[in-house]
Image (cartoon, rainbow, N blue to C red; front, side, top):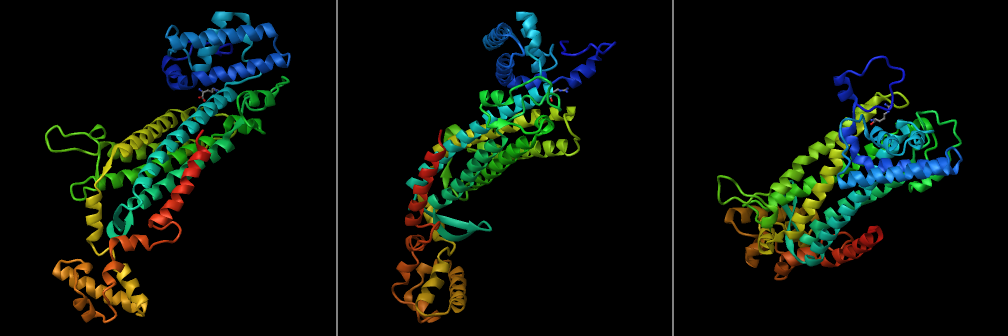
Length: 461
Ligand code: ARG
């Protein structure tokens, strides 16, 4: 049991209390960040004349040797220590003696843990962003290859109008682009340094908070020390962004699962990204997509948990805040893993273009275009809508598509039909005539793709 406190206590901590209170099993995650923060702090202490240069050098060397030994496995981070801060400080004192006892001058574990968690989260925000950029690149590649790949677009999961695969993928590009922008935005807002807040009230030492903030890559120190130690908004924002990413991935997964079903057969998931059944030899299951969909709830859970933890906490630090870590770490790991796996699955997935085309040709996806055609021939839209409705009814009865009706049959329903109807309602025409910005035509999508390329360039590191 290695603790940083105890002077005022007359009895040893109960074993169960010690275990309940300890955080080493999970806060070891930010061991590197703890060292980074301590290095900046100690450099600042020396610069301000609070400790000597010799003490600073001894501490820095000690921290380096601890890092080296942990990295090589020579030194193990064990539950003998209450938390990662105690582990580092105790080992430092062990190694360098007296100077090590000065490391914590003008610092509290409250601002220390706030800093460590913020540093760790900031690097995770960057990592999530880079994972998303990889995914955007995969989506963009598929878009470029499929500006004329026709498929049905759905509403209510009913075939609605023909679109292209590029158009469908583009909708996901938009979602993940917003996710990237959200992360950039969060990073900017969170990038303020809590170090130097002390326990809550600031400190009596002449700390240079601007120096440590700059040293650690922050925009500036936090403006209020009480907020500095007790703000977890940044983490809530990040968990919210992760939840939205998972929601997008889950929707996409649902589509992949549907497209991969025996009934649709729009896609073929690569063998490397699917799994089999222990009993049914014919099965090839979309487990990755299902797991991504399933793990979404877990990430939402982390967000709800932290929101709930924070809602009743008076200023400033309270131990409840230790609960900000385990589920948040899990959410970060889960989401980053899901983006990576989903990208791999998407990148290796093949599209059955013939099936997509055939499917778009069935189900009267060109009905709107038949009505538009009649409008072009002078029929009022509402009348045209009714006429096409009757045509569809007849086609359902005869089990044929609108294009399969002869001109005479069409004329019998409405004399405005002419020979050019067939061209006007082909899948190709339905798609290529939708030229408005953001629509499904090749022209519109090529414009979007050019913008997406620029976006990726602007955010890629
Ligand atoms: N393990 C603690 C946490 O994660 C570190 C801060 C401890 N501060 C305190 N006053 N007990 O929040």
